[in-house]
Image 1 (cartoon, one colour):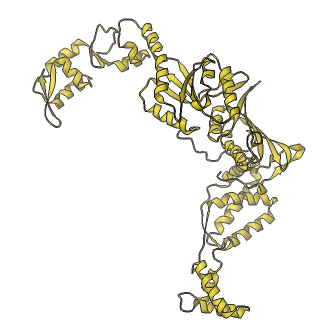
Image 2 (image 1 turned 90 degrees about the vertical axis):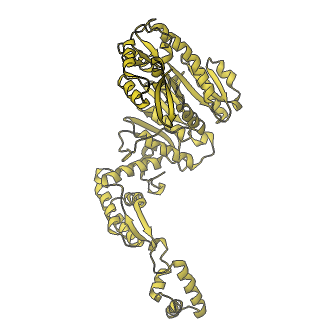
Amino acid sequence: MGRVLTKDLLRVSRAGGSYQPRFAGPDDRSVAARVIGVFQGHVGEERRTLTAALSDLEREADDFKLVRGFAKLLERDAVFETRAALDPERARRWAFAAAQAVSVVSETERETALARAAEGRDVTPAALADSLTADRESRQVLASFEPRWVPAGLLAQYNLSAAQTALFDASELRVRTSDPRAVVSRIKRLGLMYEIHKTGDGREIVLTGPDTLFRRTRRYGTRFARLLRTVVRADSWRVEADVDDRGTARSLVLTDADPVAVPDAEPVTEPSYDSAVEREFATRFASLDLDWALVREPEPLDAGDRVMIPDFAFDYRHADFRVYFEIMGFWTPDYVEKKLAQLEAVTDVRMLVAVDETLGVGPEIEARDHRVVPYAGSVRVKDVRDVLREYEADLVAENAAALPAELVPEADVVELADLAAEHGVSESAIEEKSFPAHVRVGRTLVRPTVLDRLVEDVEAGMSLDAVESVLSAAELTDTSAALSALGYRVEWAGLGEGTVREK
């Protein structure tokens, strides 16, 4: 989980049945600076010396838990090493063997045993004695300390960690956020069960706790804590939680008014997926050159008094047309029932659902007027593509019907792809149109006057390289199609050595 406080270090108020963590404020910045300074000033010294210095600071501070909390977070930036003249385990073996021979009881006999253990070895009795306990935690040396945080950053990290620790024993979370899409995406990756309820002033995400689904585990509570990092990145947010405080039910409320934020948050640079099935499908779909853009977790859809966020959406590149896509695998019977209820409530949208064959609910989904593709193990891209092509055929026909029968581009040379983009349609929508002012050369439209000039510039016997330079100047990139239109072919004398000949 990264940098979090242990529960024994959490400062919390229980006034009025609440459970509110006590956050560090601007006045605590000097304390944070002093804790950082103690670590920096004890590089090269043993941990026990550092601990003693921190204990002195605890006695001086108004709240010892605050000092310990800062120190706990900073320990991750500290590197401790065992430093000794001799490997401690070897030193103990030598010393114990010598002690058995001497029968150590007194201090004098101990010194005799150490001297005998060091005899004939490249180590002094004092160095051997020092090595005996050098690997104890208290004896380890602070080798380096490079704090990630300045005092202000340490305060921010402390407050975030305190809020996360307070959620460890939460049994249910209710989240309102200005960025529900990011929160739901994170919820899915964490494997949390959730519902989205519509309220009078927006939407509320409800996360079901472990008491209702699984046996109570601390791991589930830590997932709530990890989710908080995403929640607090939004401009506005509110979290309400039911907390089990050692058998007593208490209420926790956190809002964007609290000093809770993610220090130095790193941006998400690549998409992540809820399952290997989704990841595999997205990867395969992206490798296809289709006229559909794959959108990860599109906007929420109304589902009665709830909200549904599909896994994907397909946007047609040449029209305002969207098909939503949900991959429905097996989680729990309750999950399946809720998903079916959502699909029942979602209307007036085009929905494609990939259904795990083991569920046996394909006919039920089709009865809700949604398209279904069954899958086993992984979703076949071909099955999804076939459904999209059915939509695409109608879209192409509509786009083509909206265009005039004849098209006269202004440019002397224009590729069909560019012309299609200019009209906001697919290439298929313009391929059957008439182009009275141009001749079609491969996938390019060319005015006859351009071809007439090329007839004068291209001659049999020219090298292919020279001809390609001429064609490039005329903005023709399809060499084979252009040569064919001019009545030429390429004769190859060797690898890469082509000569233009008449057909």
